[in-house]
Length: 66
Image 1 (tube, rainbow, N blue to C red):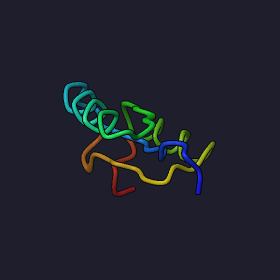
Image 2: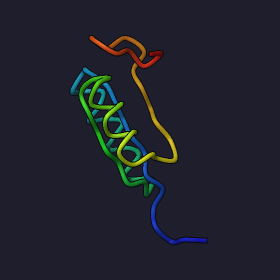
Image 3: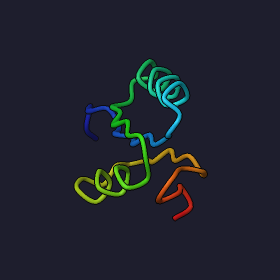
């Protein structure tokens, strides 16, 4: 098993929430890619699939459900 931290994508259009979730997950030892919208999340996930994605349900453009 690898000792590398698990990579997580965090997508939220609210900067305060995105920063809080990112901060707490980094404190827990995760490697975070934080993005501001669904299109950026899709591009990041497509380029290098993470182990987990934390997505806001209501974002402009692509939502977390899309």
